[in-house]
Each structure stands twice: as C-alpha cells, then as structure tokens.
Image (cartoon, rainbow, N blue to C red; front, side):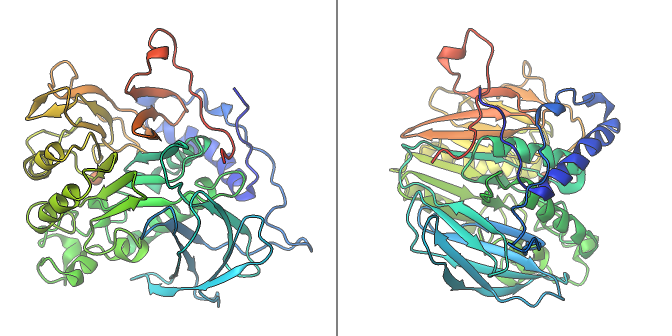
Length: 469
Ligand SMILES: [Fe+2]
C-alpha cells in the first residue's frame, strides 16, 4: 500500500496538530470509547509555501467556502464563499481548465446570511466539460484551489462519501472523519442532515463558523482540490427541529407553520441561505448525467413527509426508472438502530416513502439521525426479501456519545448495528455498486455487498491515494 497523502495545507497542518491534542482531550470525556490508539498513523507534514505569493505575502483565503451543485454535476459547479464586514471584495470567481493559460471570470450574487455579519457570495459555473479539473480563485489575490466535474458515465469508476450528523461541536471527530474521507479521493460528500447543530439559533452561529473552518481545513485534498458537499436538511437545521413545533421557544415571533417559502425560511434561516441546493422547498433531486440520481428528502423538518413532498417523490422516482443508481438520502431513519421503531417521524417514513422506494426499484437508501451505524437486511413488504431495499447509515460522521444500539439478534430488520463513528464510501462501477463503511481510524467496519475475494481473510482497506485522474 502506498504511504498516506501528505498535507501541504499549513492551516490543515496546524489544525490537525491541535486536533491530535483535542482528540485525546475529547475522548477523555467519553471513556467508554477508549483512547484512539492508532491516531498517530496519519502523518502531518510541516507547512509548505503554497499560500504565499512571489513576495512571500499570504494570498487571500476566505473565512469559509462551500462547493455544491444546483444542476448536473458533470457540467456545472456552484461556488460559495463568505466575507467579513471589513472585507471589500467582488463577487467574482476566476477559473480555467487546469493547464489553460488564461483565467475566465464569472460574476455571481450576494446572499444575506440572517443574523450573521458575514456575507455569502455565490457563483454558478455552467457549460463545463465532464471529468475535467478546473482551477479557481476568489479574486486575483487569492490562493488557487481546484475542483473536478463529475464524469458523464459511472465506468471510471465513481466514488463518493455518504453519511450524516457531522457536527463541529466535537471538532476532533469531524477533523478526523474528514481527513479519512479525503484519503479515499472521493468526488463529493453527501450529508443527510444535522450539519452544524446550530438549530437556526443566532446564539449558535459560531457552530456554522466552526463547520466552515473545519471543512476548509479538512475537506480539501493535499493538492488543494475542494470536495463539494451535497446536504439534506436535518432537525438541527430547524428552529424547534420539526415543522409542527410552533410552540417551541426558538419559534417565538414566527407565525404558525404553513407550507410556504417564507415560513420555511423563517424556521430554517441558515440552511436555506447557506446551501444553494436543495433550495426551496427543502427537498430536491440531483441528476448526474444518466447514471445516478440523488434524492434529498426532508423528514418533517421544514416540510411534512406526507402530502406534497410524497407526491413529488413519486413523480421523481417514476421518471427515473431507467437510471441505474437512484439514492434517496434523508435524516430520520425509517428503520432506526438506536431510537424506537414506533416513533412518529420514523413511522411516516415507512408509511409514505418506503412503499414508493419498493415500487420504483430503489435498492439503497441512506438514513441518519441516530448517531450509530446500521445496515438493514434487504426489506420489502415489511419483511426480509432478496429484492428489497437496504437502509444504511444512521448518521455518525462526527458526533460523539456512545449510543446503545438495538440488538441485531432481536431486531428483525438489522443486519449490522454498532455505535461506531463512520462514513460510507460508495463506489459505482457501471451498473454495479459497492459500499464500504469506514470509521475515523480508517478501519473498514462493514461492506455491502461482501467482496467474495475477501470473505476468507482480513479486510485490508485500500483507500485511493492522490488524484485518480
Ligand atoms: Fe438529528
């Protein structure tokens, strides 16, 4: 196996050094998880000078940035960045195909971040070439990062990381999870809600600032490729957590819930400002060429599960029966591994969405929220069935706290369950797909389907190192 990638990012290096300390401190409060004995295996290099200009002066790096998509990821990219009040900067991105001589300019729009002193700048680049590297800068005095457009077929193969419940509240965990994700050279991170745990609360804005700071230092590869994030909404993006919580103290002064853009923006003010996608009404579908569709759903947070959203879901699924990979992702699990099976939102997922998944041929659904790891058996008609849907996840990317899981032996739908922090490496190869679940130490804790060649021996993780293309 090749050595691990070396960090060239000085901010990453400094942050990660602190992080090693924090990890021990953090774990001290969670003794049941034990010390992270293997943490030292991810080497941190001294800073290089990539962020300096010819005169040795530091180049501009925004306080926060985010890459995501609003349209087909094979030919577009949406770039957001944030500025502070004393920064007078144009909303312009300079970009060029890697190797091209001149930079092109694209102007965008500014977006108000409610309650925050920061301004959001947003530029969408369109008409790009698939499977191509593009350099970009946040103005002429900025450092250069780059991104990759997605390939227009799944035969490269295509790899991304899925999970949920990131939380910058336990900085150490998020740092280490992200750094493990980067080792796999993923195209993007797919997050099923509970991103910063700010609850739409002005007093918790710092959590978003931490979220962007940590991701800036860790969801960037050593060669400065920024990993886009595709994010669904969770309860911690919403004042009161759920659309029907009009009585919640964080909803004071907000009119009673109605299914309108205006009310959704009031109850989830930061999510709708910070994430260009899914945008209003809070659920959406992202089509990657003709090989993958990711459906972001809203489990009762800014929209009820039933009614308009379920009708929309049926039409979206019906139009995509020819797409080989259709992945719904949402926050509250229909098949929980920690919370009770009979809870309200969990039951609505099973009542309204599961029959549609089964009818239209969904094979994998990503669930979150329980802060545990689980994989179900394939399920169809409320029983284990070889042509069923596998529900995987339960959201434990970067949150701490050792939660109990239901007994696999006594829970008919659970094939695997554990309290492990994890993310899921999804690899598509043409019509085939493989899921590898990895913990923050880089250990593979599960895979689906099982690789036949590895069935008799120890599983050796083989993370992608460097840029594959
Ligand atoms: Fe949650």
